[in-house]
Amino acid sequence: MPVLTELSEDVRSGLLEKSATKTLDKSLFALFPKNIELWMTYLAQAHPWLSEAENLRNRAAFSDIVEEINRQLSFRIARTISERCPNWLTQLVTKWHKTQTPVLTLNYDTLVERCAGRNRDIYSVPLTPAFMRTTGIATDGRKQSFTLHKLHGSMNWFYSGASDPTGETIYYLQASRWENVPPSSLWEGTASDKVPFIVPPLSEKGIFFQHETVRSMWRQAGDALELADRVFILGYSLPQTDLTMQYFLTNKFRAGQQTFFLVNTDNTVSERFKKLFGDNLTFNLDFVGVPNPIPDFVERYVSGKL
Image 1 (cartoon, rainbow, N blue to C red):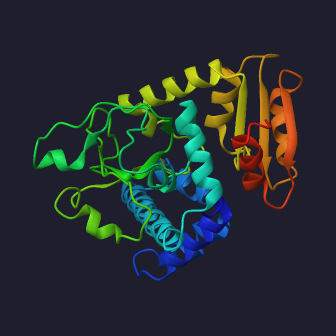
Image 2 (image 1 turned 120 degrees about the horizontal axis):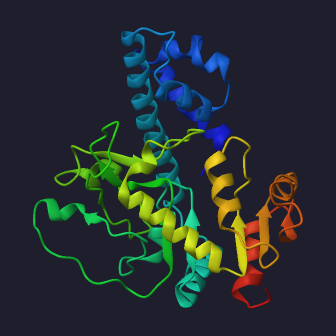
Image 3 (image 1 turned 120 degrees about the vertical axis):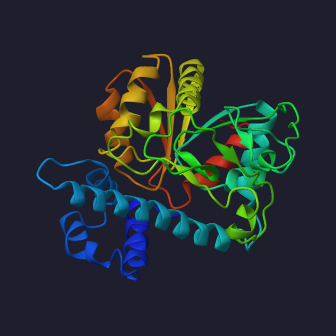
């Protein structure tokens, strides 16, 4: 999956191919190069120096970018699942299942669900299966496995696309197979009139977090974080613009009682975490700045060496 700068480049290239969005390159992309977070933050707000028509055009461009994000990530997922699931990911998901571990993720993709398999109900909040829009058949009870808190939504969760989705039903399509299935075939007949419920990479995400289901998920994730003695941060670099996660982490950690294991190729990630938490946390930096930090971490983690 791409990091933020790579996703920005992919989305920019896709938008330049469309007549309706190619003019963004002369304004927005030039002002904030390789930063989709700032593009969307600007477009999502109604600016007083712009006319109503211009603000509405910005809102339309915002929706175009959300659609392009989904399209680009669908390409990435299709390429990834055309090969076998990596052994380290299978081992990690199996470990999570056996220990019923709370897992917090900011990713939109469905690779973890696909690796977990079809018989595991792992989402931390109750979502409505999309097939119930036509059949009305109830789902099975919750399985005993790990709990997945998808804090920024997911590509297989769907809603109307309204600017204020508070109270709206969120549907999901089960992603339970590690195989290449065209995304469009999954939507047909159940969610073809919906759009993916993904919280865009905005510096301020308040509008999307008003939905009671999303708020419930964040509260559960906060409870899980407070209870944990060890917190494993896999691949997340704590960017300065992600104010939501900074507020969340500093509000929910237990000073002097937790160890954060940082697992990242980025050597500077430890500096950002230490700046945020100071001496209130113990950090393990064994997996920072090494070539394959996550597979190396998983090997030690599943073997019981950590």
